[in-house]
Image 1 (cartoon, rainbow, N blue to C red):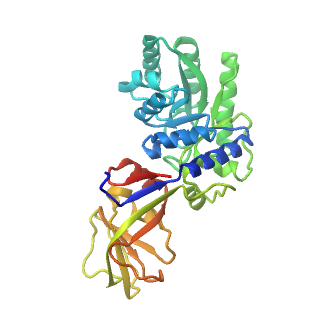
Image 2 (image 1 turned 30 degrees about the vertical axis):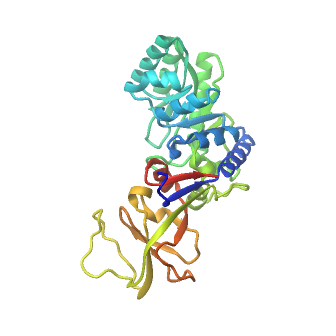
Image 3 (image 1 turned 180 degrees about the vertical axis):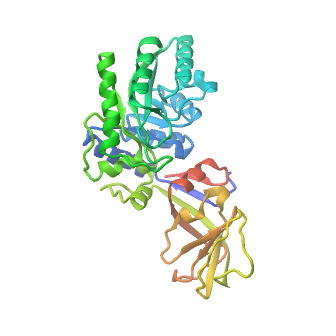
Length: 363
């Protein structure tokens, strides 16, 4: 990769740590601990360290391999697996993940066996489906029954807490009612097992819609799992209207090189259906100056989730290797070899870390 110049993703680690500290302080004011989710960065160790140094209680990911690398580099960091473990990976989960989220009895029993074989006690957070219909046990009675099973029958597991997810599959937002459902389940479980749960996890970054607006949250909720909204707060500001004082939006900058510039009619010529089978409508704005950046869906997924940092530049469309820009109103003359920078929504940020075609450079 050393000979490749562009595209480059610049990462300001000081900004990432500052954002983590700001987020943890905000949440602490509402009685909430934060698990810093770093899955978007493909388990990047530098970002994991910045999250931990910024105050995140746990470092979390949906991939066991990420947590293995983090635990190997930083043994004192508490790791949390936020996707239900696969049966095929339970030994690795017990070895490298201090905590895992669970909803399946079969998986829990396999974790218990693996933990026993390794001579350890593994902590679990049981997930309840309170509306979004992703992972989680549906129904209070079945949920409490599973919790009692873990507590009474699985001696190598520690029932650490309960949690729910929101807006991940069905778009169901957290509110007082569904969070109260989780809180009431936690209280019923505590009464049954005769002790307090350490974690009652009220969702992910989407729950910041309540935290940042000072909306009421059940007192029992004491934990959130927050990822992209820490490092890249632009997305939750634009998508959800959540603006948090002190959060920086300049932690990541993607730079690509221009390979073509020219004047072209804005509407396509002829019948059309693009490379992915979509028909895209273009407004007839006459002849416009277009530039092509050497970056595409193989690098960043949906090019429309790039935000040009140059005023007057508009992202029009893209293919697997090209991003088409309208630079007519930018107020400058563009030439091949020039570079253009972008801020990114969550999805292109995830792509950048996951491909070998984008070089990551740290400040």
